[in-house]
Amino acid sequence: MVKPTEAAPSQPCCPGLGRHLHVDFFRALADPTRLTVLGRLARARGPLTVSEVADCCGVHLSGVSRHLGLLRQAGIVISRREGRQVKYELDRSTLCGALRSFADALEGARPGDK
Image 1 (tube, one colour):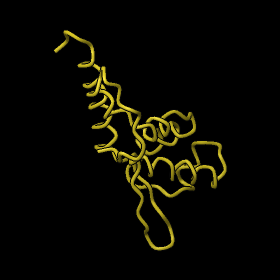
Image 2 (image 1 turned 60 degrees about the vertical axis):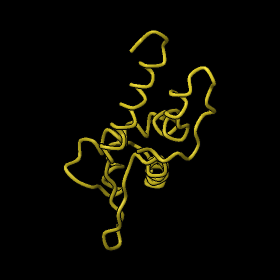
Image 3 (image 1 turned 180 degrees about the vertical axis):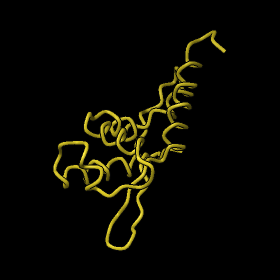
C-alpha cells in the first residue's frame, strides 16, 4: 500500500475517506512531467535508467531524477541499483491498489450508497 507519510486530516463526517487521502501520493501524481514519467514507465518492458526515462520528457536528467525520487518516496515507483546504475519501474500493484481503495472509499462516502 501507499506509505502513510502525510495524510490529510480526517474529517469527522467521512473518516473512511480520510485514511485514503495521502497528500504525498496525490501530490506526486499532480505534476504533468511526473505523469509523463509514469506513462514512460508503464509502457516499458522492464526497469529503466534515468536517461532512458528522460528520452520521453524533454527534461534534463537531474529533473527526471528528482521526479523519480518523488515518485519513489510516494511509493509509486520502485528503484534498484544494478552496478553503477539505478533502474526504476512502476509499482503497478501499489499504484492500482491505492487508486482502487480511494475510489471505493469515495463511492462509499455518500450517505445511503452501499
